[in-house]
Amino acid sequence: MSSRRTFLRQLSTGGLLLGSGWLPMEALAAGAATSLTILHTNDMHSRIDPFPDDDQRYAGRGGMSARAAIIQQIRDSEQHVLLLDSGDIFQGTPYFNYYGGAPELELMSAMQYDAATMGNHDFDNGLDGFAAQLPKASFPFLVANYDFSDTVLHKKIQPYTTIKKGRLKIGVFGLGIELKGLVPDRLYGATGYNNPIVKAQETADILRYDEKCDLVICLSHLGYSYKDNKVSDEVLAASTSGIDLILGGHTHTFFDEPLSYKNSVGEAVLINQVGWGGVMLGRLNIIYDEVKRKNWRYTQPVIVTKKSRG
Amino acid sequence: MKSLHYLFLPGVVFLSLLAGCRYYQATGYTYEQIQVQSDDTLLQCIIAPYREGLQAEMEKVIGQAAQDWKKGKPESAIGNLITDIMLEAGDTLFQHKPDFAVYNYGGIRIDAIYKGEVTKGKIFELLPFDNTMVMVTLDGYSTARLLNKLAAAGGWPQSGLQLTISNEAAVDVLVQGQPFDTSAVYHVVMNDYMARGGDGLEMLTDASLEDAGITVRDIVIRGIENRSAGGEALSIETDNRTISE
Image (cartoon, rainbow over all chains, first blue to last red):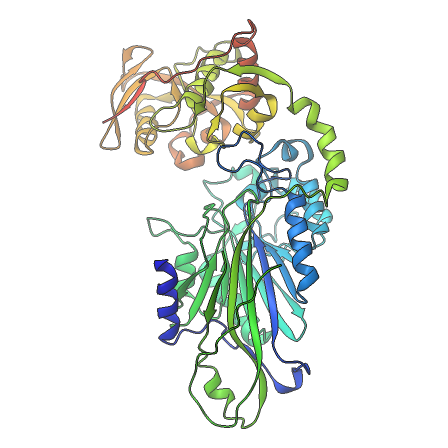
């Protein structure tokens, strides 16, 4: 595929996927290579059951049980797994109309999601509706650019979180789309909207420099790309630095593979999105090697052994 | 799909100054976009009670589709069905008889209702939002802006109008068979999301609004039930009410 060639070319001109990408000596485990598995979903839209048999595009696909089984398989073989969602968990099947999001959050908790961000449809039962279901989530909701301080969600949504997986410290933050015109005013109430680019840079800097994270992940519900100059994951990638990975949503885009972009300082940042309705689960294995070097040496490619999933 | 990528890390420049230092280096990644499809029942113990609470209701058959009712632009069978039912229901729900009905294209959430049994659950998938049906009263100028918005979007579902989309504008517009009149007042049925300015319809936010207090979904379910009362399969076709040039 042409996009893969593009990606390799970008990297070979000096792109950097993982801003720091290393751990100091004292943090080392005794073993050699380690890997971090990142699993992610977006826009599941209350698709608890698989798509019905008469669906001409996705018949039989998706379903929370099927997803849970795949995740369990991966957890059985991988030591360090992160499970993340990029919003629009709610709305789309009668489950949401009847239960207001309770089963969705219970099932995600059972799958041991580590974090999620809020999509515009997660406001569909209003701030009170969301707040009422929130205790069912065993994982945090992250949005760095919404200001909830005058709402019932004050202090219930955080801008970011950090997660330790083995020796790695991972920073995860969320970004939400502008709600005005997209969500009825009465549903989002006094929620304030801040510029996602500004907040993303602020938060990435905190995670990179204050929290000293080895990897910074953005859960974005901005949407992958627009014809006009509306802020999107593409714009976000190009306008910020310090973010390694943008896991997107909102536009329901099925990526064949993660795409690499240059950030504001010329480093590579990956964007991925896996359509909608839970028909796909994104998986990225970031591989870390223990490295010993005595001489100053500029970058060199390291060949990664192809790993296969059982 | 599985692929493999290599990384080049300029950061190594600095690290290597610490001669002999050992550290972890991110050397690359593999990825896989995993298709989710299996008969696994891992979480059924959580899902089952929720499913049982709504299954009987959702599986109720409310009618038969004589053919696939697809979603599309500038006009579609499913869009015509929804807005025809809205316009008809508006006759009895509001103080004033409505002139036409419109529905935002993005509010229709599945691509088609396929030939055969139409269940209540299918209409929940089609119209998942709990938006109520409303009627707004618009002056001719605001109506023209609404119609141009509809046209610029490539044609939204509507009932009661005959219009042509030309250069993203609505032209040759007939309202209930009468030429569009900029000095007239029009009564327009839609969902409350649209009436409150959703989907770029800011021109509607100042208009007077009457809310039926019933979701469009419930109105459409009832409309299909009524049309199916005789037991015949429903045939819904496009009829060139919206033409794109």
